[in-house]
Length: 116
Length: 113
Image (cartoon, rainbow over all chains, first blue to last red; front, side, top):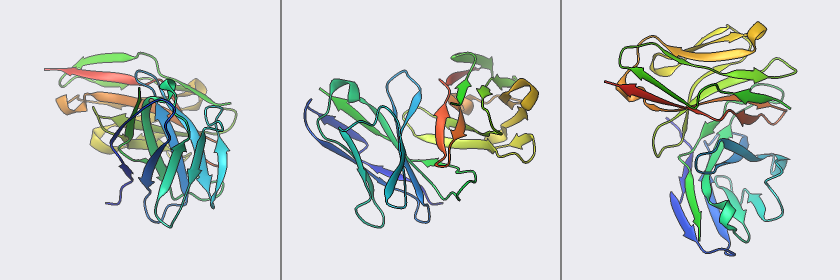
């Protein structure tokens, strides 16, 4: 069964450093998403991506964040200068979706980011 | 904006007992609703979804949920809990053309032997 994969599973970085989180969505999916879950809190939407551009982003997704689909398979989230409060589990999700229809999202296992 | 409320951050049941996890939503349009399960140190796995077809939705692992518009609820049930059901359960509503998910705060289910 196809699944969303994410690398690395864990990342430890120093405050101010750049990190890139990688995701490989399910191959025929068209919509891609990033969410984060700070320890003990709810899962929060960060950004959605469709047709090679951001379709929606949350207030959390400020100028420190960017997303890219550099090739036909990978979907990346970059944090330019990490802050302590960026420590969280980051989930990638993808959906085959159709315009206006339900977009059932399938999630990857997550990358746990720890900023020291 | 849509929102989801899950009543009870922690629910404990005995093995074999009924599982009932509560979810209420607010939405100005007919919603798409989802339940996801998160096992320890794992990602989110789709349990079931409501997409305006049948109001009683069956999912994996014996779970089902009933959409009740009059109560704005989408509670998750399972007739008989199993030890392997111990996990965190998230209710979510889909919003907007892009389908972003708005999650509830989650309910941790414990199953006692």
